[in-house]
Each structure stands twice: as structure tokens, then as C-alpha cells.
Image (cartoon, rainbow, N blue to C red):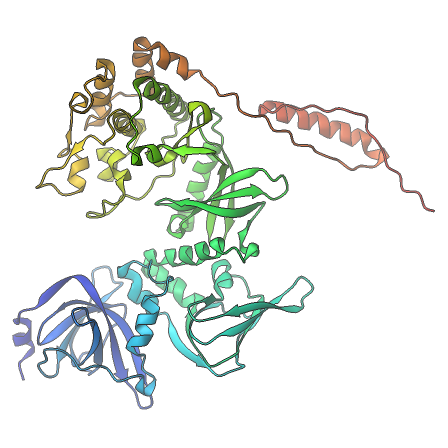
Length: 584
């Protein structure tokens, strides 16, 4: 047999996309398995990476998917060497094949408790695992265990302190839910492909339901304690919870999950890079709101969440006719929800997708409103950080609302340019540098360019990588090349706003306002334009005793003054009427 040193000299194929594999270790009565990623392979062996250390010299089996033949192959191996990675989160292991092979043997089906290729394919094709990043998939799979239940076997009990999530691979079960009186009532069935126990998993609270198998079942069990431990090593795994939660919120048959504090979620509106947006309403006042559920990685770790919430409260204090209001923040399901003004209008990116060019007067009218919003926020020491077409809404009467202040989205990785929002990011933001109001000014310049020309101002060089297009290597086309009718003041604005270096740009939005106000009366007038927004009336009924009138008058005085300070109109009319109870 070739020595280990000889094996290291053999030609190996480095895999750009690691392959999933399962390592089996035989015991006296069963087989223990562990998932791993194959990093490279050759005719003599493979290099794997996992979150488990393997002892040198032991002889496991390796089951690996062959993408060319679309089948799983089994290889008999010996652990040749093992080492921990620099991050100390993963282990790399060299496995030597015990005999030369072109393709491994097809695995036997489920002997000695082994999982089968059918089991793995089932898991990988569930909607719960399809969204997991590849670098974290093995860690998640290694938290799960395959379990089988006979008919009429209870496997979830209300009050069980150990929360576990179950994905049903085979069979079905009955669900009984404890009501407010503590009595269990039938709550439906769960079948193949469904998940059960997710609400306890999301809330970290004791379960309030029972589950009993009504046929032979095969499930995959995921304990919350193991999942939390894996998330500490692989932070990207936390968005597994996002997939569970969005499934619940999208389920029309599950109204209970849609209660978020004082608000109720009605229907999904869309998805961004940092969260999902739903239409909702205040549960008592029935006022429409937009509810933004932040993806779970945005709510981690806890120390970052505290600072983030403080910033959101600062944004909520912004009072401006062109800034979408933030009403509230609610924490639930291990993330948080931002309650915002519901905007009945279209985002700017919808116009861009339809290749709609804005007439010059319209562009100036809309631009002035955006500038007004940015100037107000910048004066309060708040930058937008993600000024893109998806965050600018045009409502009835060409009224502009800018949303999502200080909610920056993560920068897409190299090669993931399907998110065109990166075209609006300033070079320093793409490079991970410090951002300030000048970064918003850069984004504004790109937006105005596209409004007038129908495209972003970057030309693609054949030898340039995707991210290079948005940095100093990207070439800013002259506006005149795309729309010769653009007046000289706007050409000047675009080129200066989109300068590569922040110090070469306008240093404040007030500079832009002053410059363009001197050039365009329409722009100047639009700065102070306010839409006559519909007024709503809410009634407050107060029940009180006759001897509480003095307290009532004091309360109404304080309430009225506070309402006026907030810009609310208050009208207290009518006599105070008392209702006495008379005993017949």
C-alpha cells in the first residue's frame, strides 16, 4: 500500500463547491454517523472538514454524493491525519481510501440504524434547509437525529422544558392544544414535510401542545440546546429561525402566530436583504401599519441589539413630511419587529424595472423632496446608509416618502450581483469603510442619474470583477452620453455627487439644495411642498365615577397638552355624563 507521503503527492481535485458527505463509525450494535464537507478528492483519498475531530487510524465508511451520476457512493477509508482550523471551529481530516476506486459502491439501505441516501435527500429538499448557507449546513445536520415512532406514541408533551423541533419524514400525527382553561382541544394534523414544535423552538417557552403519532412515523429531531450551541460556532445558522417564522407568518390557518404585541400581521408585502415586510394593523385602533420582521442574524448578538434599538428610537423621533414614520419596536420569536407607517404607493425600483424615464420637471420635483428628507435626517446626525430605489416611495400626487433610515443591508459577496442595490452604495461603503452623509449623497447621485437615463452609470469592463465596477475601477459615464437633453447644472451635480473620494463630493445636502435652488424655481418650491394628507379621527371613551371628576380633568389637561406638543389636534366636546348603577 502507498505511504501517506505518497498519497499527498497524488493529483487531487479541489472542489469550488464542497460536497456533502456522511462519515459512518461502526459500533457493536449500530452505526454512528457524522456529516462533513469534502474539500478535495483524488483516487487515493479525500480531504474533509467538519465540526468533529476524528482519531487517526480508525476506519470509517464515507458516503458521498456523486453529482455526475446523481447517486451516493460508499468508500471504505482510514483516518490518515487530522488538524484543527485557524478559527478553532472546524476540523480538517485526511481520509485514505483502503483500495483504489473509480467510483464507490452504492450504499446498502439502512442497515444497523444507518441513515440512507433517501433520508439525506429528504432533508436537503425540505424548505427548512434549502435556505441554510452551505458553510453551516453540516453543523445543523449534526444537531439532528433520526427517530422512529410506532403508532399512538406521544412524542411531544405540553410543559416539556426541553424544546425540540421535529421535521416529519414519514407518517402523520395528531395535535392537541391547551386552551386558556387548561383543557386540550384537537388542533389538526401534521403530515410528511411538516414541522412541529417550531413555536416553542422560536419562543424558548414551554410547549402548550401534545403530539401523538397516528401511524408509524419517521422524524428528524432538532433540540433547541444543540441548535443554540451550533449557532455560537456558525452564526449564519440563526437564519434557520427566520425560515421557520416566515412560514408561520405566511400560514393563513394560523392566526395566533400573527399577533405581534399590539399589532396583527395580515399579509406579506415583500422581502429585503435585512428583513421581511408585512401589512398589518393596530389590534385596538385598526390603523394600518407596515411590520418589518428583521432576519434573525440582525438581532444577534444581544449587545448589538441594544445599540440598534437606540438608533431605531432616534429614527422614530424624526418628524418630517418626506420620512416614513416608525411607531414602535416589538420583540418576539427571538427577533424584533419594526412597526412603521404603511405607505400606499410604489417604490422607485418599480419604475426602474419598467424602464420608465422621468421628465426633467418630475425628476427635480422628486429630487427636492428626497433632499429635504436627507437634510433633516443629517441635521439630526442620522445617515440613511442604504438609499436605494426600494426605499423611496412615490405616493398619490407625486409625494415622496423615504423609508428605512439607518437600516443598512449587508454587502453582497463577490459574484453575487443579483442584488443590484449594490450599484447605489458608495465606494467606501463597499470596501467596509466609514460612512457619513457624503455616502448618502453618492447614492442620491446614482438615483437621479437612473431617473433621467433609465440605467445606472457604470460600464462593464470585460476584465473587471463585479465589485470593481462600483469602486474606482468602475467608469462613470457622462450623463450627456445617455441623455443629451440633461441641463448642465444636473450634469455637474451628478458628477460631483458621484465622485470616488468623499472629500470631492458635496459635503452636505444643504450645498446641493442651495446650488439647485439657484438654478431651478421648481426645485426650490418643491422643498417646502407638503401633501394635504388625509386626517383621521380616533375617539377615546373614558369610564369613570362621579367622585373621579377632578382626576379626569387633570388627566385631560395633561393629555391635551401632550397631544398638542406632538402636533396632534384635540377636540374635547360634550358634557361629562355619569352612569349610576341602581339596584332594583
